[in-house]
Amino acid sequence: MKKILALILVTFVLSLGTFTLPASAADTVNGEQIFSVQCAGCHINGSNIVRRGKNLKKQALKKYGMDSIEAVTSIVTNGKNNMSAYKERLTEQQIQDVAAYVLEQAEKGWP
Image (cartoon, rainbow, N blue to C red; front, side):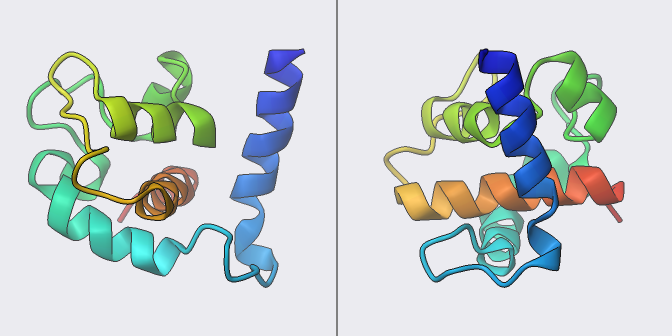
C-alpha cells in the first residue's frame, strides 16, 4: 500500500510542472533558490562531491528509495550519514520546495 501511495505521489509531483499550483503547494522556483544556497555546495547539478554514487540523479534516487517527496523531505529535514539535517535552518515549506525542485530536476536529467 505504501508503495502504491508513493508511486501516486511521485507521479503527481513529477506532473506538477503542467498544472497551476495553489499558493501552499511546493514552489520549485523557490526550491531552486534554496538549493543554490543550501545544497549546491555538495550537490552541484545533482552530483554529490562527498559520495559520488549517492547523487540526486533519477537512477540513484530510485536505487536508494529517495524518489518520493516524503523521502527527500525526510532526508533534508533529518539528515542521514554525511547529509546534514536542515530542520533548524529551513522552514517546512522551504524543505518541501527544495524537495520538489530536486525531484523535478531529477526527472529532467539535471542541467
